Image (cartoon, rainbow, N blue to C red; front, side, top):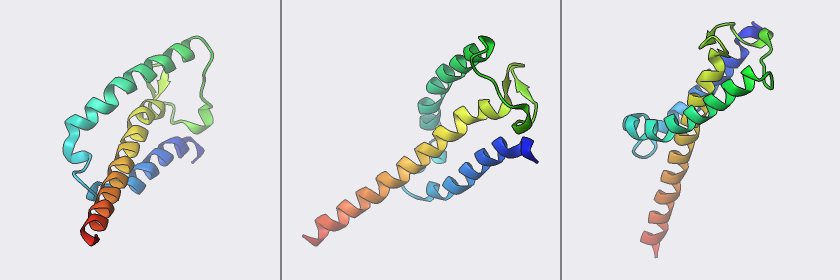
Length: 111
């Protein structure tokens, strides 16, 4: 079971933040915008990770990853990390921004 921990944590992050899609204009509903925010940053960090792995600076405990490597260097879980965590961050930011904006509108109407 240990080898699934990394994937389970990523799945839990997605599951916990998924309901936040209901707030505001949504992140999943604006996939192009989300991709434009996530892909360039993911590319930089994936490159950085691959360089660190190849240089022997960074490694992964095989007990906690599935053993599936992409592109033969990096665990698939690590690759997914660079997409899942920023997506969860966008969902959270969008929800908080929407709640704050609604709160501001209510306080303006009360004046």
